[in-house]
Length: 447
Image (tube, rainbow, N blue to C red; front, side, top):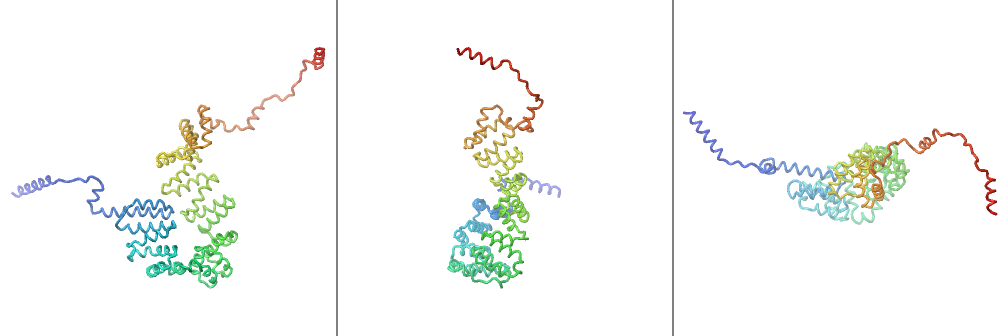
């Protein structure tokens, strides 16, 4: 009896289950929307995009960072304040202080939670647009929230705000001209030197450098700041004296620029490499190492620097990579990168790309493709390509004729081969007709 009841119960449950219609999700997004992890998934995606935007800002690629912000289109949620803050930073770095200030005036930043994160930037905006009242009002609230987060109690920002307004624009010279630096503490001295550099008033400070005691001049940061002042004042010999025995990325980059201006390219190349070694993301060092590698024919290292600089698929550096690969005689890889650039640009190819790809196919002895790209380069007014196009129309298999089969033959060897085996004995002269007989014949004809 019990078994019969259990069997009936199972049968009824199975029948009820069969009548239930299960709707399978039509897409992955629908499946995610049905789960409790949907919000976590969206949050993770937003964080990943914000991380990418932050990377572009730190790399100085502000255009790409702004484009990513526009594409994100997050109008609500936790990421909105972060996006607005990033956008304000981009506008500030682009010198659009008023626009940056307008973004930070959004009501979302009035709560203490978010105000603390943006108040320093907003204060700087007011300083840069010379809005004295707003700078002081904003700083009064900001200082109380950020005071304990600073090692020097926000002395830098406090000084900037104090110099805002008429004092900032008209009488700031007196601040640097009259202030004594002899008795200043090392921290205050560093702050003073940085402020002078920031406001381009270092000439007044340089006149007081001799009053500093040896303790101040032994501090590496102070010596570096003074050296940078002399560098900006075009007193390069003095700058090098203060940079002596100091090894920082800034100093090595400045030393390299000295050598580069003096056309000492090997020394400049070495100094930039030292700067990059101490700071592997030094954009200044990388930017200068790439052309110097080309000038010094360091193809392998030049390629490495372009790859290091191009961590986000920048087409400009892809182009350089292709050029370096051509110099390394890796023509297939060079063409592969060039075809990638062409696809990204919807097959609109520049004269430079055509020229490199033409050269690659010439070296690969591919007459058909070489002729095709040379013709395109000629249409884009490349004179060398037009000359090659003329030769293609005149020679059969011109690409095969661009290199000699015997590279060892040079002019001197050809001459030696020509004279080898010749008989150097003196030639005997045989006189078959005497000159006097010719003269007599002429004489008879004259009569």
